[in-house]
Every structure is written in C-alpha cells, then in structure tokens.
Image (cartoon, rainbow, N blue to C red; front, top):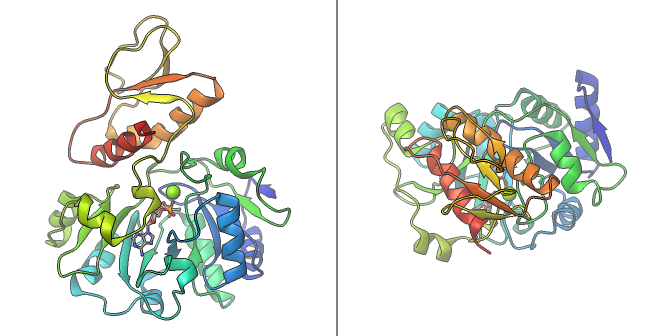
Length: 322
Ligand code: TXA
Ligand code: MG
C-alpha cells in the first residue's frame, strides 16, 4: 500500500489506471474517505470485501463523476430523483434507484436497486473523471474502515484502519480532513414517495426548501425488511471505547460536547466544536482519539436541532449499541 500525501494530476491519473487494473484506491470525499474499486470488476470487489471484513451480501454505493452517467447504472428514474440530483449533486447525497444490468449482484448485494452518488470533493471528482476518461464506468466505494468501525475522515485514519489489510499495489490518496465528517444522506427513490434511509448533511428541511420535494423520514421497520444496509444496523460506527449519551463523566473519562459545555475536572476533552457542522466534522476523529489514548468510557452530549444534528444523533445511537 502506498500513501500519496500530495496528489497531482499525474498521481490522480496513475490512481485511475490502478483502479482500472483492479487495485483498491482509498480517496477523500466531502463526507468521509472511501475505499474505491472498479464497480464492474468482480474479483476486485471481492478483494475489497475482504479488506473491509464486510459480509458479501451488503450493497455498495457506486460513485460517478456527474449526473450525465446516471442512466448507465439506474433506470426508471422518478422525476423527484432528477430534482434531487440537480439540486444536491455533486454533494453528500446518495440515491437508491432501480438498477440496470451494469449494477451486478456483487455490487447490490442481490437487490434490484443500486446506490449512486456524485461526490463534490475536488480530488474525488478528478479521480472519477480520469477513471471515466480511461473507459471506467463507476467506482464502488464504501467508507474506508473495517466493518462496523468508525469511518475515517483523514488519510491517517485510513492508514490506521486498513494498512494491515491492503495489498502493496493499493493506494491511499491524501486530500486532508473531510469537510462534512459524516456519511452521505441516503434516499430511497424506488417508491412513489422518497424516503431517507440514512440521515446526513442533506436534510429533509433543506430538500423541501430547495426543491419542494417532500421526503419521508426513515421508517425503521419497513426499511429493515426492504434493504440490507450495514450502516443501518443497530451497532455500527463504534470505537473500542464504550460511548455513553447519558450520565456524568468521571476523572479519566473522555468527553465530546459543544464548546459551551464545560469540562468537569479530570475529564479528558476530546472535541469542543462551536456548532453542529463542526461537531459532525470532528466527531469521528474524537472517537478515534479516545481509542489512541486508551480511554475506556466516552461521554457524548448530543447536539440538538433539525440540521446535521439529526445525522450525528443517528450515528451516536448506533455506536452505543453493542
Ligand atoms: O458518504 C458516503 O456515503 C461514503 C462515501 C465514501 O461516499 N460511503 C459510504 O459507504 O458510507 P458505506 O458502504 O460505508 O455505506 C453505504 C450504505 C450502506 O449502509 C449500504 O448498505 C447502503 O449504503 N446501500 C448501498 N446500496 C444500497 C441499496 N441498493 N439499497 C439500500 N441501501 C444501500
Ligand atoms: Mg460505512
């Protein structure tokens, strides 16, 4: 595995070529780092599942450079999905749509739908554009962490998660710290009315405000029947430390809370974000820091509000489940 710390046009070109030859390339997106693979290469996708330690029937998101390539992967695209794509792509949103034959079972976990995203991080964009110029059709990329663990938001976190599992030919592209910090909003677009399966930076309110499209809030029971989505399992996004959302931290415990919340004496402050956006950006790094410092109990004061706080609370709930 090679960690490329300063990416140039030529390293991006080489990375795209490497993807085309079936290797894995970890790359930054605006949400979290992804572990990319040619979405049409069955053997390479099998290697990816092995590296992640992820059960093979769980679906992957296919990343494309622009909306122009959407109908290669998806069919029967509802009008509302086009509106969503126009408003929020490139950006932190994934649409679940009926698949074409290109989206094979090894990508969709045998489902008839496929997840598609156009990321906005300039490095991700450049990599996908170059990959497509070289004849590629899409890059499948789960978050670049081991299954069930905290998603990486820096290249160093990817190294920490995966260096023991990647092959010598695999690459990690460094693009700094991810801006959003939590994974994309996933919207099921296979029904008459769209439904949020995983909350993210693109919220219900933002969607209604910018497109007039009314999206249903995540309905857990029906969702669990409909899809096998690992990020939607009860326990996920979990550090080694035990995370508490209630109770009081004692000396030696870790604390994550908004800046305005004071640190009790002896408690180790892991993050002090000034607002909910910063909270999302710092959360996963703070959970990782707890593990590197060997802290066993982390107390988190969850943010409130209908913005990205909804996504933060969703992840917090899951990382407290064991
Ligand atoms: O922000 C993100 O979405 C990041 C970056 C790298 O793009 N990717 C990401 O991928 O979070 P992953 O694999 O860690 O989580 C994707 C989620 C999983 O819960 C997966 O099951 C769900 O999307 N998913 C993918 N395809 C699906 C489908 N056809 N139906 C339902 N859920 C799907
Ligand atoms: Mg993930």
